[in-house]
Length: 155
Image 1 (tube, rainbow, N blue to C red):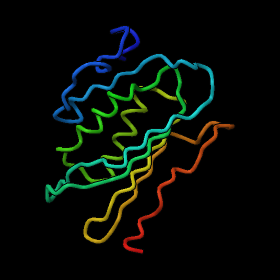
Image 2 (image 1 turned 90 degrees about the vertical axis):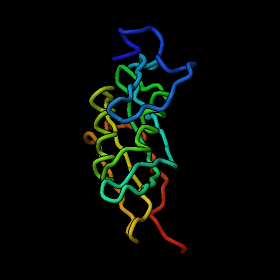
Image 3 (image 1 turned 60 degrees about the horizontal axis):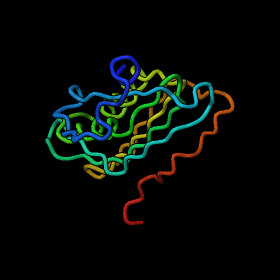
Image 4 (image 1 turned 135 degrees about the vertical axis):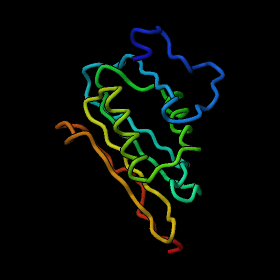
């Protein structure tokens, strides 16, 4: 894990960092949890997330909300921003993109718990919302609503 043993400081923080060409090429930095042992929730919201439809190549837009209870590490936010930005030219179904982001973060960071809500804007008149979590949340974890209303069109 970068940030723990490879280098003492995150690779991207404070550096001029180009957007990775693909999610596979994107590196995520993890740093030691400054409150190791505490049960708390971290939330990242990406209200302007984009990827490409794997069939038409047209852009797909989503509001992503990532919640996690840290274990030994936390994800460095600039590396997360670059990782999410790398999907801009990535072809993927909503389900694959949403679950893939959650799974990669969970597998690499190894938090106590993680969930992701992918609130995708309509294509062909149907909004698709995709939700994934690693397991049941830990007891006593304050878990606020993700705060994204279901799509209501012009209503």
